Image (cartoon, rainbow, N blue to C red; front, side, top):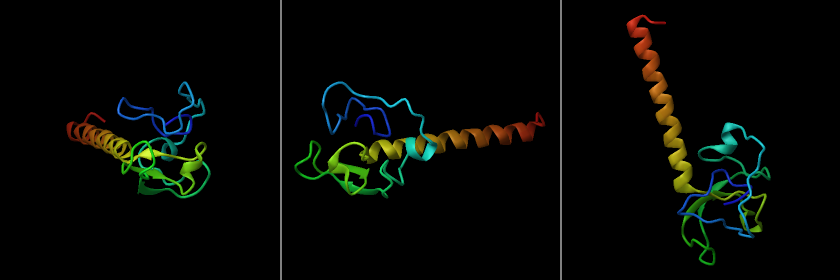
Length: 110
């Protein structure tokens, strides 16, 4: 993972391009670039879901990345399982908000 990744590294994942301490970008990202399934890499290319090559640290693990991911930063590598969990968390939050809105309307509190 690393400076150009979309999520913080978890205990189950290590940086693909390790060269010391993890780096964190202080630049805020818009929602589509920071959470869930990414559409584009930082370089501007479209991302696709693919398995890691057998020579990589996690062979066969599915991830989202552009065709140039092997060149390292600024190219994206976002693990499929982490992206999907972020999507589920956003959907859950949206569903909870909808439920709250419905309860307010039903109770006449709005």
